[in-house]
Image 1 (tube, rainbow, N blue to C red):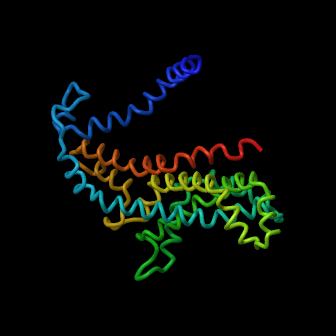
Image 2 (spheres, helix red, strand yellow; image 1 turned 135 degrees about the horizontal axis):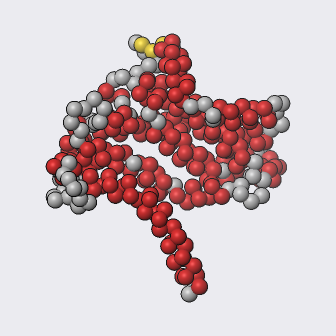
Image 3 (spheres, rainbow, N blue to C red; image 1 turned 135 degrees about the vertical axis):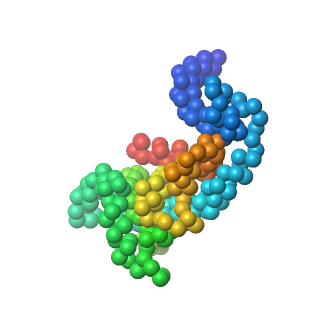
Length: 280
């Protein structure tokens, strides 16, 4: 009974925060299911007069949602793979090897996180325009966006993983060395499996950062077939004389689903990774 009473008071205290978090999604769902006349009606109502299922088909065509969804998934996944592939060996070296200037390098990584992509986007565009790729340059290519997203997230990934890797006992690797493993074998067979929660958390944060990014994609991409979801949702509003707000809300709602699915699938790794290293 005491535990039940404590849970009740905890949920009661959290209720305002839960309402604050759920409220935007409630507005999005309500607006997405309304016909346009209900959206513009005054006074507004929470419940639609009828559920406009046709909004899904109209939005899918207007936003070219399928193509944009593929672009966002492809770019975000590849940028995450790139960032993790570079960050894992770098973080391992920082946490295990004695390197000259290691402390200075850690401070440099921290300083880079203070730079906004907005400050660098012009320079990034000029660099991409100077790199030949195919019949043109890296401008207006998915590869160019992937490289930029991965580069922006590498510093954060290294900083985060290095802190986690430092908490993993060295005895595990030393025992593997005694059994005949090389350093690379010990890392692949012993170290990385133990570090899966930390790598998963870093991958989630990196994926979400790439998924939500807007400025670089707006600057680098021009071809409609390569636009990401963030650009497509904005295009439903920008430059329109009449905005179909039900379609905008529906597109924004569906754009959040991949991230929600990822969080649900990797929730146990997320909890483990966030608490890893809290106690040494």
